[in-house]
Length: 179
Image 1: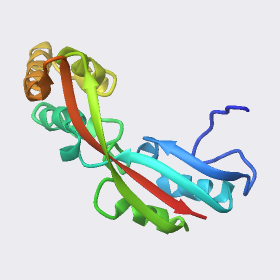
Image 2: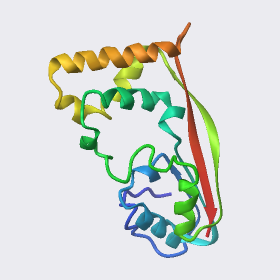
Image 3: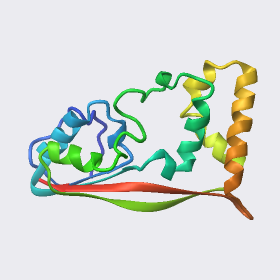
């Protein structure tokens, strides 16, 4: 078995070589999704399958929804790397995921909701998990606003505290289609 890193929009692979393509939380972040889906379609064998998981709506995923709602109070969200067409929730709208799969040529397309439970040892641990995602935004904020942002997010997360940590419910979408 070999692992290779490559751009999903330009797969350096022969046509019709894979029985299946599986993607976990990646499709929604690809800037030119239609190109990437065309490439995935191209490398699948006839009757090959695609299965991909993406995030559902921010409201269904407080682990992401909470910081994004609070961040909007402090900064222009267009500075985030995914401010354009791609982003964590870009395929979350009803019918959107299925629509992009159909547009790429897939048949027998569907999407189903997958419930999740994100468990953390503490509110501090949840907040620490955001640092990489919002690092660009935090660098542009003054110290007073950064401290207040952290306090606001941690306060909002406290509603999910349980006796042994923090449990944040969530929801993903499993999309699938056949070549």
